[in-house]
Length: 133
Image (cartoon, rainbow, N blue to C red; front, side, top):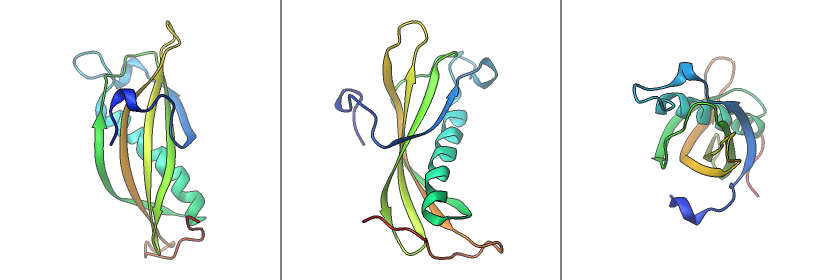
């Protein structure tokens, strides 16, 4: 995983964008890490669905790194990049960048790896339809 200053621009494709709202804060007034992680899971699942061309399920989350707190009112952007595919699984790196409304500064706040598996309508593993080249 990278440090804050190593990545001047996001890696991957903008997959999900939302606004950090007051209802999602922790006791310190910053956005709750669990909410942020759920947004990352959604972003990764969107990309995984494209590779599976159908239903996927999250099977693992690893390498989560929270670099900075996320203040209320910032735009939260999730960038996803497929880094490895297997027969039925896909490993996706998700980075989260925020943009403050006041300063327009864009900074990376977290990253993590998510693994998804393609499943059929009965919840059984099935092959991916698309693989990394």
